[in-house]
Image 1 (cartoon, rainbow, N blue to C red):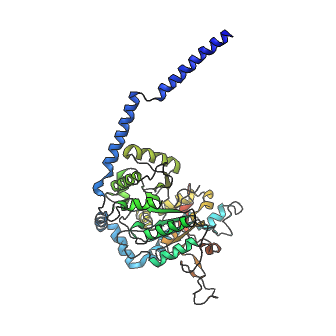
Image 2: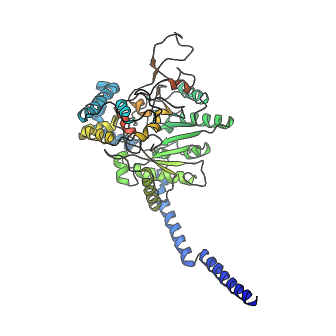
Image 3: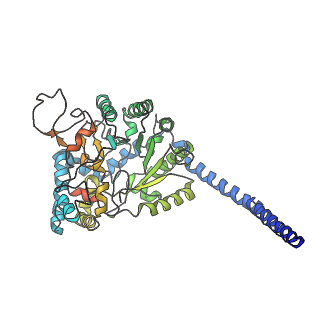
Length: 456
């Protein structure tokens, strides 16, 4: 017994020694404290250097307008649009994509999907048509005015697009459709720079207030170009977004200054970093405030597919933290669609056929069930309804019969492009198939693409 007690006492001393040792290890040594202090000071210094308080309340517009005046490609495109119109340009784009696919011996999109997918496995596919699920996302493009003019912009926004802006009447009708569609859990506001539209704050405040009053879980998304947060009269914008628990989805196509400025305009990178730091300071992008989500969007700078979303997110988080002390929640990767400004770039470089071949060769049947057109309804600034934001820019509206009681002929079977006044609920759209065309290959290539990021 004495021997056992002695052994236990000896073991107790050993255990106490281990605990003591662990205790010493857990307590920070002077050198560890110094390293952490140095690291924190370094981060603080980086954040201070890049926060650029001198830019707050200053406008990017003069720089953007100056660049547009000297941009020969933009001037040439503007003249062409003036000559043939947006619809004429859209038809021309479509013809170029169609010729590229014909040269490759590839059929139209829906025939290709039908040939490469099993209708039993892909339940949304019926007789070479795609049919909607219950709508989950109401996406509103509330105007094309923007303080930037990015080279990849599929909606061709710029400071010159002042007239295409949503009215109060249409905004109110969109809120009615939101309230009358129980399945909607996300209100997605985009543009242009949506924050510069007069209806932006009205939509956010009314939607958030209604959701709280009715105990309805609703995510409100602001698709933000970041630089708008520094524009004059937007000094309180971050506080407004925070107060209304708006999820910020922000464009940042690279974590390098040269690449961002080449794609988005001179001076955009530094303003974007300053804006991200401003969001971080308000609590965005921190695990402590899950209601203040900050997601970044990557899109390729050329005719290639985005890399894997999860692996690229790791790179983004490392680089932005190490260089600027910036944190964010998620990275979304989006494929460049062969439409509008990117289509112009492909045509100019003689790469339309090459890019279409890339999209077709990387077709992934696993992306079809997750296509955003299946559970998203897109509404243009003029109230017209579309399957997705890309169809919106191509003028491919949903074709159907008006449900409006004030319609001249209630018994008419005439079909037309629908707008927000033609339906009483977004569920009314489920009976119509999705309109597709050859640009849709962009959403089914690789890991898929949508406004919510990869789909497979």
